[in-house]
Image (tube, rainbow, N blue to C red):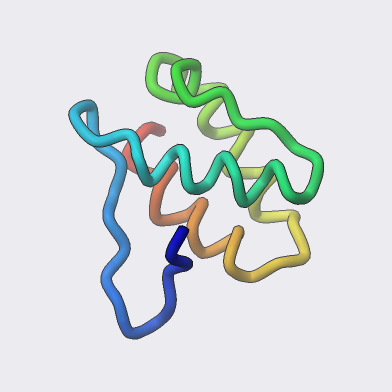
Length: 74
């Protein structure tokens, strides 16, 4: 899995391309939190809660990824 960095544009999750959400799911899983991808796609309140959880994580990569990936679902 390639990790995003400041030099490469990050893909946004869409209805046709949930891969960025799956990437975020595995990043968060490494810290013991689970992201339910189908639920994020259908429940804006759950997506918002996941974003708040991710923004509280100590790893900057998770915070930046969550902001970019989850905001379209809010």
